[in-house]
Image 1 (cartoon, rainbow, N blue to C red):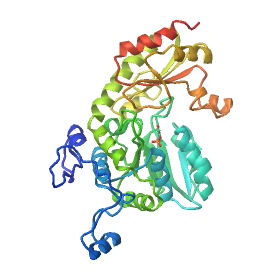
Image 2: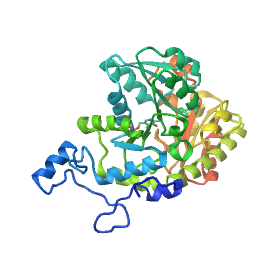
Image 3: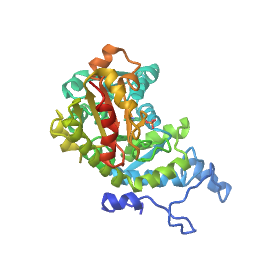
Image 4: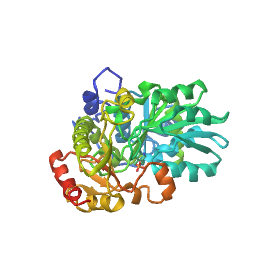
Length: 394
Ligand SMILES: *Cc1c(COP(=O)(O)O)cnc(C)c1O
């Protein structure tokens, strides 16, 4: 099933990309091997030169990794996909494969924290500069373009405030100037949002989150036209941050239940967000699936639902927020997301704790803000868990 028939996502999720070995295994095989043998010296030479397709060494390719790549490509509607060791490796590989010294990136100010650090501290050292602009105002992106701008980089919804970037509008601005657009689709996954259908050039994933979905392994991927992913592949096979076969196997099986999980998590999130919005101790709820979200209409145009992340602000600042966190017995106190188990985070003292209070305030991360990455527990149990702390705050 490596061709591209017009199967629906449910079917692609369990079938796409599978290659059976001579043994006819029904479940996808895990090939734990770092290298591959050749039938002859001549074949070895042809494999190395690329004249003959086939596996050589696991830094280049591995059949289990290839199955994962094919399955994710099918779900994203991409011509090709290359897997990476983590989400950050996918972002680094995309930038270093496509940009060079003197080039320039325009990126959202609301990107994942490690991505901001990667661009502003590590990639900056290679002579590739980044201008950070408003997540929600396309005019700022247009104004930041320079002759040497090569890439627009965004992620939507943002973390933790679930602000929506207009993928179609930003892509139109970029493409008018011949600039590539890469979207980190980690929060929505192809189940809820297909950036390639909106004209984007490259879709990037931290597979660590919803694609694994059960908090086991790290992984990442870059999807898009083969001509573009081939450059990423060339970077990876030489620089080395490829996905391990074991992690690929976990992620491949994770994709099989992605739609079921993401849809159930989104339904739970919506129910929880509605409950929080009515709660007297809650000042504000941030969830793109609610009509109260300032960009609800745009979100519903480019996403199938509001997704699995709900943020809310309690009255009473940090003390109140910490009270809620510290009375959770069910929700895990951790900063990850995309797991079957719900997680609660106080961004101002964790994920956004190292930036200055002024920068935090400018980013809208208040002391009373909490973020929940909603899992698969019964919503009533999550509500009861939150209520324990909410009942105690002034
Ligand atoms: C976690 C995350 C990343 C980084 O992925 P890793 O797999 O942890 O390297 C990138 N982008 C977003 C939106 C993330 O949530």
